[in-house]
Structure formats: C-alpha cells, structure tokens
Image 1 (cartoon, rainbow, N blue to C red):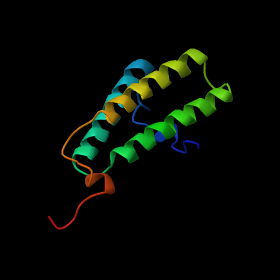
Image 2 (cartoon, one colour):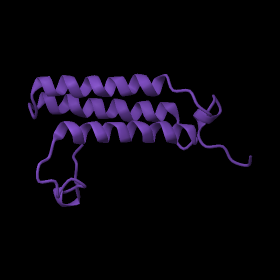
Image 3 (spheres, rainbow, N blue to C red):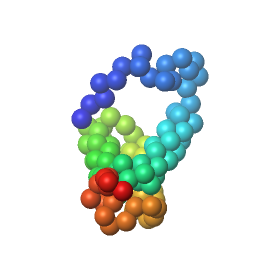
Length: 107
C-alpha cells in the first residue's frame, strides 16, 4: 500500500516549521472523532472501523520490516493506534446489533 498523494496536496505544505508531533496528534484526534461520528450515524460499522485500524497497523509493521523508520517511532505509532482500536471497540452509541449489518433504510 502506498500513498499516492503528493506533498503539493498536503494541507501542511505551507507550514514552514512543521512539528510532526502536533500534526500527528491533530490528525489522530480528527480521525478518531470522525470514526466515532460515522459509527453514531450508522454510516460505518464497528467491524469496519476496527478493520481499517488493523489495516493501518499492518502497514506500519510492514514499513518497519523495510526499515523505513526507527523502531521507537513504530512502537509509539502502534501504541497510539492500539489505543484508538480499544476506544472504538468500547464505543457505544446509537447503533445496535442491527446497525452492525449496515445503514438501515425505511425508518
């Protein structure tokens, strides 16, 4: 899996002093909030959300095997994603077992 988005398309392209921690924290918070919102609105099932997080974790592990980043960074990233996975796994909202099957129609 590769990211085909060029840096020209990045929302951070004009940042003359990028601070990866601040950018990463903001992005992680935004994504987790978005996932929770999609769950509450029935647009995403918990299984789909967890699958997406697990897929991202797998990509991080594969990049580590190719030594694309320091082991410390990998462990920190995986820890943060695992925390998100636990948060989503514990999420309870408007959805119920029927919502796990996908959005409902005709209500």
